[in-house]
Length: 284
Image 1 (spheres, rainbow, N blue to C red):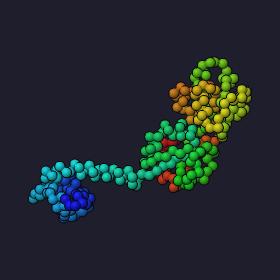
Image 2: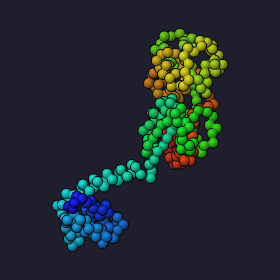
Image 3: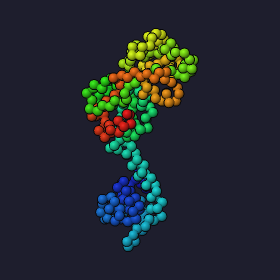
Image 4: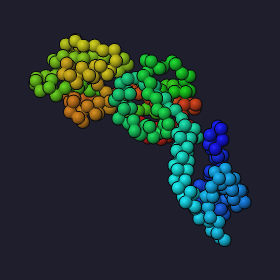
């Protein structure tokens, strides 16, 4: 003990001690660490001198921990394990950050149910960024983007999430009232997805009644339909969970297919090829 207090010995000495104690010999510890037997012996000798305590009994062909060495060993191993785990978590070569930018409806309806698997793909920090807030705040190559369209984008990696299929859905409470659903209140949603006029043209239903609720994004329109406030023309793939849980029911066997859909887009800087293959399996 000096005026500055106890001085922690060098980590290389501590590692030599732990390896020798675990392996049961200086020779085996040397083989494991890539050092010579004399280097292991020298480092442990320095450590014992620093601690002013013998850590091993040296026998002719073996070593044996002293009481002090045996008492210290579990603390050393715990500290080394903590250091290794922290280093891997913060600086591991396979860890990093994966950012996905998408509309809130895709985040809630498609990504949220797959969060555990997405976390495994990210192998680090996963950031889900709403399209409205994050579409333009990072270089294109740094973010994985999910966009609605035909897939005509110049990205290195592209994946269509699903084939778009649209049908009228409503809450069970609304459907239970009986009668022809085409006369029930309607919910409309702005955007690229076909609406009530397209459905009427394709299947010959009346264009009236005019929708009494109109939203600029899909998610609040879907929430209104769940609440029984009207019939919504919805993406069947995005509503799989609602249909399975009985929150919504289909009102027609007819399906309106659409040439546009959601696409996952990524540049070479956003994701490695092997990681992209794993992401594609999770999202598709």
